[in-house]
Image 1 (cartoon, rainbow, N blue to C red):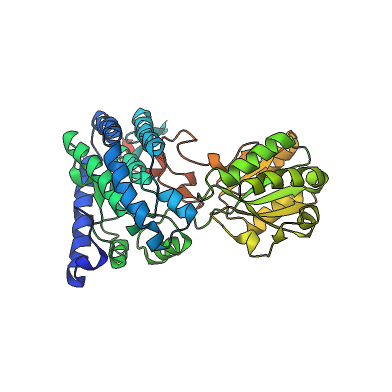
Image 2 (cartoon, one colour):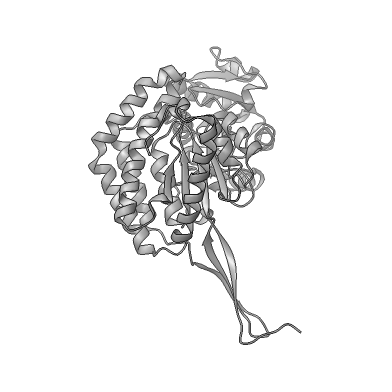
Length: 429
């Protein structure tokens, strides 16, 4: 189905439309649950080739979205997330191939034991069922989400933002065509064919057809999904990520990591939003790193000690330290020691991604033990908290929850398990 403008579905038909999406997805999920790994991999590989072969078509569709982006109020960082280019299409295709190369988690024997009475007990990986994926801006995640859901045996209902409607429609058409060729159910990957916000509400109420909701976008979207969903939600609200430069840091390495973490793609949830610097190296390091950040166009907001060393920095408020800027802005604080850095992260962070730069193994060990985040980096950029970068092939999102998955969510995180118990006429006394 092609995407429709918000007003094109009458209210009395919208609920029936959403019900049809859920029912078809549930039927497709039952087929996918037992689909051969070979068939799923054929679809992934064929889809990767289709993305490359139709790159011009995808870029043309994306150009329409980018041209309309200012009308939706998107800032520069959001437009960057929306934009496709040849490299991003190639990366998406490579992600599909990496997912194909990964072990299939469906049917995986996760534990095996024999009880004293002779019962054979297996814990076996199984799909979740139907995933409702709601996302904004980034059209490349259309391919990522479809790939991960189908390979893990789940049907997926995709609801992209109106700002990416042409890109998502073009991507979905390619993926859908290849499902049919691979003899997998076409309804395994469905795109919600309306931008009407009420459609999201209808789908979030359908716990009898949808097993998991995954929102990926701004805080208001995630709060809405978390409050309205009648099924479990896999999510994170904020990416307030820190880089702490320790007294024992290699300052050349630290500068490279800080600039990369903030500037490489500032509009992503794993970009650094706060820089913490040990007082012992602040006098030397802050003028150096802040000069590099300023040359990249970064606005600095700092504590009193930061402003003493960097007069051009503006005062940082308490709210600044809690803010996910998603832009070329960073808050800076000089801390007395590692303990103060850890305490600051605990008070202001979002449990997403936090990094330490140090040559002191003891400091690194303390930081990784005490910082309660989904990913903790040692001498590496926060930008590496990403499914593709960490070998998952792709990710459908990053979770800061503790149940049932945490960090980048790939194939295994889109499955659960069941116990398969085999006896020989066993009865319980």
